Length: 438
Image (cartoon, rainbow, N blue to C red; front, side, top):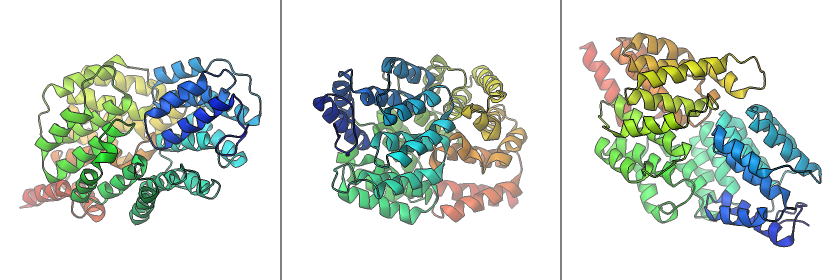
């Protein structure tokens, strides 16, 4: 039968309907998606529901949950070309060929341009791979292929907005995000894109004002609640100082619950590391974070996650853990497998970024600069956003300052102020440099 998107989908009518509701809720980043998906997957004939479950496990960016989700999917005998194509994507991704999975999704979307499962998975993969152009172009193409009357249609503009932001077109990103929010006020991904655009322009007070005005849309449980609180803490760090940022960290970013998601650990490490660069003592928060990362050592599966684990171990002073992880990253980088996407990212920039942070924690600022400076324009290769990767850009600048490379540090500050002219952090670094030159 045809689903709500006009695509032939195998399964009982109620299961196909539940799958459509699950997909729509996923675009809205709402947790009710999981209930709809469970109902759809209960039908053994609804293979795409089980495949969507596998995709969600892989989107966790962790080897263990991804492998478990693929195992739960079980053996599927595909009934048509679309199921066959999705199965190929999942197998490639689970095998570590993230880039190959992305290319396979190109094929799925060429054949079925309005496939919402493919677009959702592709958008996440583009983020994991740091492919800003495809973050923008895939949703843009979908805007012309989807039925504008579908309730999920406005969410495409929010996805497009995030790609525009990662390409550095902040005015266009802001426009697309606001358009999406006009059509779907609870679209936290469009809000997320708008927050990123404000962050990258140094408009911290505007970001805080936006999040406060929209608290009813993001303050409840949804898939981006913690990450949105992280953005609020970054804004607060610029406008109100470290006490407010730590208050947000304790209240929402790190909830202290059992088995936190990778995103929680990533956001926690990124925020605490910024505070450490500013000389703020985060106390026992570092130890708890380092211990959580140590519990989920997965043998270098995704460089972006491992780089945040290095931040956590270094911030906690557990340099033994950091060195051991960097050694495992080096081993992974040596893989000769051309389909090992993580190895490619490590070789291109990830390993240098990890070694640069470790050298910084060891107090060897010259070595830190030597590792970080050559790759500072290549960091997108290991995924994430500009805002998240700014942790390494800040580390480079502080290392240059502490290591006495004031000329290079001044270049870095000028670059930051050109993009974020009102950034208090960048202006504070400029004041440090001016004081050193007097």
